[in-house]
Image (cartoon, rainbow, N blue to C red):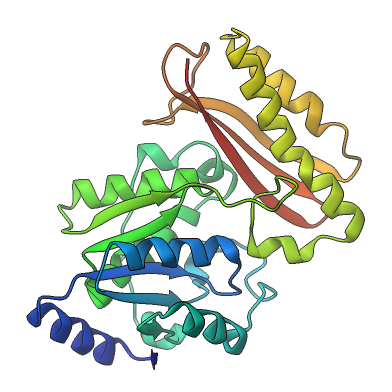
Length: 281
């Protein structure tokens, strides 16, 4: 496994593989890897000849007062996990290499980023789309794999790729969960033992909404209320949002008359966690 930390060297390697006719698979990460990340890498290996994983905590997607400085980092540990999976290249650039002095170019997707995390974290998705667009130009993948836990992010990247005619296939991978249902996240490390127990309520809230849909419920407010009622059982939980949105456009839905996504964001102690479930009418 090769570790590359400069843009030019990564582009040189990508160009070589493309000349050889290799299919490049790519998984962008911010490091501090868990089983969810590893599942994305296994998916990329199945769909490509060479796998690149980026490890880069992107400052432009963090707002003032967010956890950029304390976001968990352990590159040595991450490298060991990726080597065991047979990753070919780890691209681990510095902030200075990705955003050289005088940087002033950004990529922004509009409508799909307005609600949910876009409303709660202004500028977040502009940072995401900018860094992903740049990574696509550097790594030059044929296939890129993203987790469905970050559902709005996945839709945003797909919109960007379609709108800008980027020649890369975007693959969404199902949410990977702990045995008790908690969606895997690098931010789970922030949770105290008691908060960790309460965090299970997010997946339980989604399961209750799914159960109601299976029983015939189609009223959006009833589904959201049921989820909120479950989350309210956690004394350390502060709901950021709980909304039913169109699964393709993220437009508001009053009734589940087409595929929808029930999206949750909540602070459990100091950790902001997100989760979702796609509901079929």
